[in-house]
Image (cartoon, rainbow, N blue to C red; front, side, top):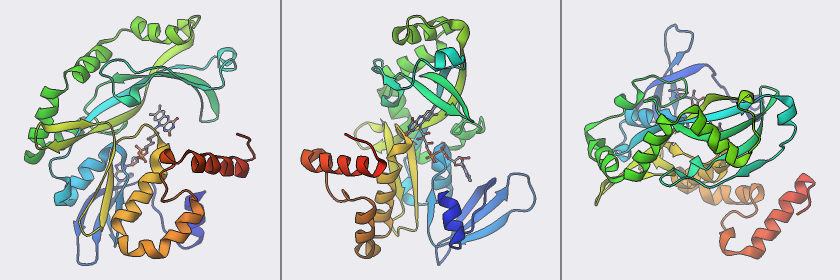
Length: 303
Ligand SMILES: Cc1cc2nc3c(=O)[nH]c(=O)nc-3n(C[C@H](O)[C@H](O)[C@H](O)COP(=O)(O)OP(=O)(O)OC[C@H]3O[C@@H](n4cnc5c(N)ncnc54)[C@H](O)[C@@H]3O)c2cc1C
């Protein structure tokens, strides 16, 4: 809907195309774009580039050659889930219920039982369990991780491998977990779950950020990191967010980082769109309550 609205105002968009290269020019960037069905690549000029390519953002930012990406690496962890499509079971649970993460587990691995609508079909999903492939996207290449290794991120990568014993132990345990061990975690939530109703699938791929650190060589960062060039002409989002719900504050961060001279002009529109913009709601419970009530009223809900 958003893209359609922008298209009606003159935006051009390309889907099923891949950015396969990018080069700095005097005005901004030239992107080499390849259709997924093949053919000759085309070139697109852009005064500003935002790299929102999920796990592949690291490789694209590296390809841009900006110095700000030096030292960054990525560690891929796939999200494996148990899924149940039995309508009788699915109709019993219409909520999202969280447990607690295991020792060493990344924060976005907190187990939860969730009602999901996938392609119009409602199912229950339980997970995530961690799996490992060197791919940076679910449909990525087995070479993604290896292609992201550069001389400038070798020390951070090694620093993380040596300094994160509990995470490594957690991942090895998770990758080697049998189906019955995975079911045990489900039974903690739903003791009468019938194993025949649940099947395993890989639902997504995360690439955790590895950041250079002067003391430890490198640190594994949970969450997301915005990397932008000093001139503000390119920015990209690295890391695994605990949810797409972080998109709005991340985009505000992009605007402030890359367009500081426009913020004066844009602030009032932003304030209209996000009335709490510029206030730390966590430090102001009264304002937080007011903001929540205003949003709820817009949605016709009561709080
Ligand atoms: C099972 C599961 C459940 C989740 N549940 C929730 C939830 O309940 N709430 C929530 O808020 N979040 C949830 N998330 C997280 C959420 O889905 C992600 O945080 C979000 O999708 C990340 O969006 P993104 O656009 O950054 O990356 P992605 O969704 O990974 O999109 C990146 C896109 O870039 C494209 N791309 C990559 N390389 C190139 C290239 N070279 N050229 C062009 N395009 C390229 C990819 O094909 C892809 O379409 C869930 C994730 C999973 C896997």
